[in-house]
Image (cartoon, rainbow over all chains, first blue to last red; front, side):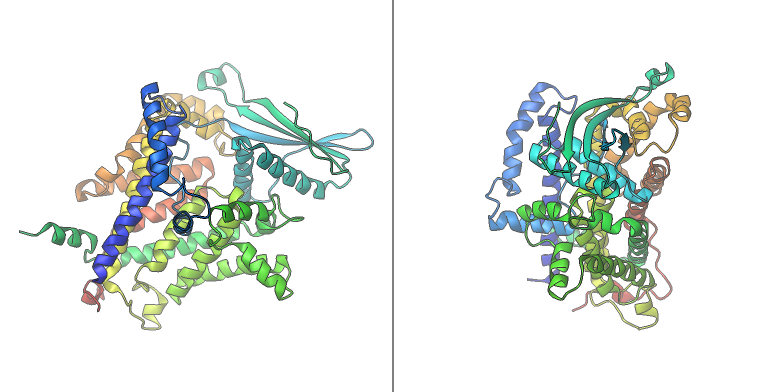
Length: 202
Length: 309
């Protein structure tokens, strides 16, 4: 097979895959009602999404060689997801606050830290991930690890409460009327030195 | 009259100078250098294991393994280091130093192919192992570096060409890989713009306002922003137009420069107004390489465009 034909075939396959991944993301957003499209569009998206997922091998067993091969390919090429950043709408941001309790009754507050602005963006993304994660055991594991990291810096704390909330942003009109960003409690996890499992509060 | 096959071939494999490749190599080398430098003090904090990191790397690597066990990651290197008696901290420092050295050599254009592969590999390991602490910039770096390592390096501004007198082995593919990058960017902006079009907040400016006052992107004070609230709706709509119409206006030569200026300005604004400097930079680099001026230099040889057997 001539080399140009091989390159042309790869081009076709590569971009078919990228377009399919983008379509899947768009259907996902529409199907979950995140867009202003009517309910009819939502129903269509819900019907089409499984078909697109099948094309991408996402419905096959995790050990399926085609699924694994495709996953490996798109991770190596950075094409594992769509490009809908800040779309269709900009969500409220999540916030995580550590409440440090000491044996003498003192209480301090800490935010997840980073020593540079570049790393700060990444830590903020991690906090967003906690807010987005629907799978409770995963969310709990991430929070627990972040609490451990806080504990390394505050070894005297006897209990740390990790409070997860949402930063509710004002509209321009509300801002002009004096309203500022507010904090809405979502859930909290308590961790003690005894390494007891955390107790979520809602 | 040309056949369809010939037309497709002419479009996919145009005779192009390699200036765009030099822009991509220099730009991504600089990008990787800044990426490594900006994360030096937090490298272990972001990518370490239990007892040193904000989130144990094993968690993101475990999730990655569910998708594919064949994607490179730092855990492979720490396991190897462990067998050789090298500590995890030393391995992490090695990855950071490796990325830094590879990116410097990529900027210089020395051993271009090897350094492009190493830069991609070290960056990919960091990105995949730090699955919870990555964002858009990492994906765009992976995309750019993946194309760079397959492109016909070295370009004519590299030390490999000037000093080591090495010519590209696949010079006829210079135009092809530019087409790949151009097509990918067109898809990125079209779908990114389309997704935004489906959110009501981009039409009335509220999403732009929210994006700019949302922590940690709130570089500009809301007190300043609110004074300009009237321009937020047209600015929001212009972002939709720039992104969604990108594939339609970036290809024709008559509108290319205008659209390129618009999209580069947009990324410059994102970088400066939202503190996403690395994200803004990588997008500008990819756009300038894909659609920026691609001048034919004095030494541009015909063999760059001619098929090489």
